[in-house]
Image (tube, rainbow, N blue to C red):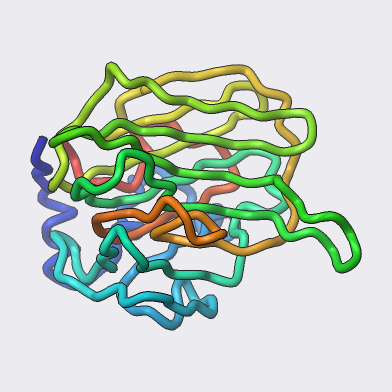
Length: 236
């Protein structure tokens, strides 16, 4: 699969605008500012206005809509000192990325609740993962916390490595769903409860295992469940 950008997206890319500026005109701009956060991976020290630091040697590359961070699948990871969906009761978690092969299990975007000082470590988290075999990959979306734990993974729904994709997971108050390029991958009813403050890792799980080989351009975090027509993404 190869993305073809809409005319509006292509013009924005040429002007250096982020993908997150491409919300349809019908969306309420004030609500966008209030309940969305955008992380653009165009540097290694500050992502979405939040402090970040790299370990290993992730690098900046040119992607189809600007700079992106490339990870080697061995030691590269980027930590961002925020859990952007902390406290959200409903949500959409989106990312634009390019998987490039590598190990079979790759946990490439991790949002982790951090327990208060003196409390046992928290296991409450979101994960975007992939499974890679040969020249194909498939999505693994995962969320867990007190009273809920669910994985959306469908090995029969495979995609080619080496190309840019949009992925999303969302929760509307009842149903947990995952998407690739706006196409539903699966869903399940879960008893979700909001997660607490924490931090994020990109390129590996928080404890620096299951490294990702590929690149990440952007993530968007919305405190409501978006339908695919409101995703920020290249048009397939």
